[in-house]
Amino acid sequence: MSIQETTKPQLLRVGDLARQTGKTVRAIHLYEELGLLSPTRRSSGGFRLYDARATERVRWIDLLHGLGFSLQEMREISKSWWNAELGPDAMDELRPLFERKLEEARAAITRYQQLERELVQGLAYLETCRLCATRESVDGCVHCQQDHGMKGEPALVAGLMSTPEPARARVRREGLVRVDELERRDQR
Image 1 (cartoon, one colour):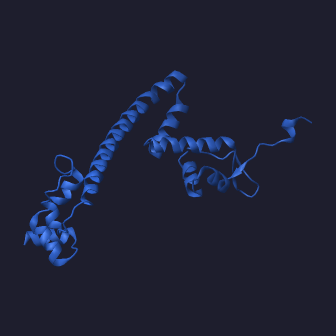
Image 2 (image 1 turned 135 degrees about the vertical axis):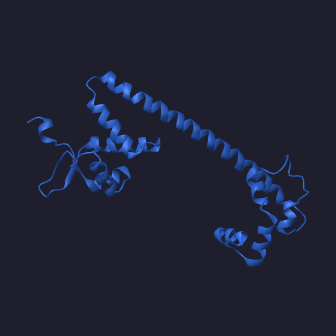
């Protein structure tokens, strides 16, 4: 008897696969419903059984999801890959999709870098407020003369300080008010 005959590949039940991949059982079932994943076989009791490749497949799904691919796009990728007659044709179908996702990822990185700069500037501005010797009201902060070490307020702070005067007065007078209530009052 050879080693291959005595060692059967370890098959995972859906709960085990979910735990190994950090997904829910429902997510695994959804992947199966969409044709992104399929069990190797079913047990005599009807349980779905998956081989080790299923773990890699779920990681592939997770990776594509992290890149912004929808489950429907993943399904289309898989379908077009397996429906292509020739490998180069399959690759040609994937290339434009990957190029588009790369552009989207780069645009998102640029947006997050800008947000990071805004947050760093806002925090630096707010840090200088700790040194303020006066105990002004919020209105005093809006007209602050303290040197914050930068030209003007960062956008995140300036936007807050630029609340229209009537709205500030209403908030002080009435406490917290829903935006739609303010809009209705302004229309009267």
